[in-house]
Image 1 (tube, rainbow, N blue to C red):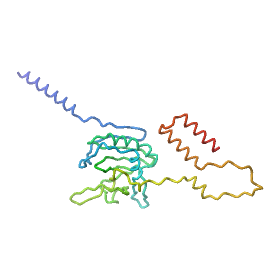
Image 2: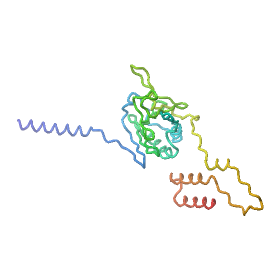
Image 3: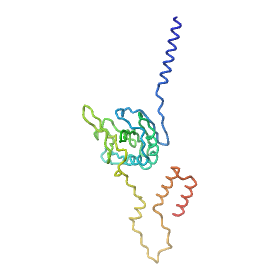
Length: 262
């Protein structure tokens, strides 16, 4: 009888062990590309927010949001800067769009992006008619959760643009804005559209007065340099990097541009 009871106990322990191991949370899946990690994680600090996932947002709107996010350095000579550079947006916009379209109702998107200025890391998720952009670090500088009032121990704070606002929490001490957490309408405001960067070479050629050479001393006419060549080459490289043209087409068009210039 005693032997029988011991066998039953061993069997129960084995079953319980199997049940617990079977119920253990599976490891988070993540997507890793060069300098960029994307994963889904539990809501945690966003637990009181009713998520509206998955979110069928077009890539153009995701790009619009990425282009509109601005932060301010909290230092004596601090400046307002865009969070994401154009080359960063080209790297992550499509992947973030896909992630928003597939994230489940109880998960949020977490990402870590290596940029030329340092690591930018944060969370993205959506609630009813709103999208949330919460940042932990921007270009290698972290945000102190104890300094939501602006200066304190924070290195930076976000700067809300048209159609954007801070997420706010309310407790016994009152309502406090979390200045690393931007909430925006799903459709980005057109007034936040980032102005195109002027071509420095083109500006230089426009403002510099041409030197005047007497006709009798002038030599044979020289071929004018193309101030937009660099921009054309960058555009061509961008098409190649996005696999819109193959290696042969890229080399052929690049040779044609250089032949025209030279």
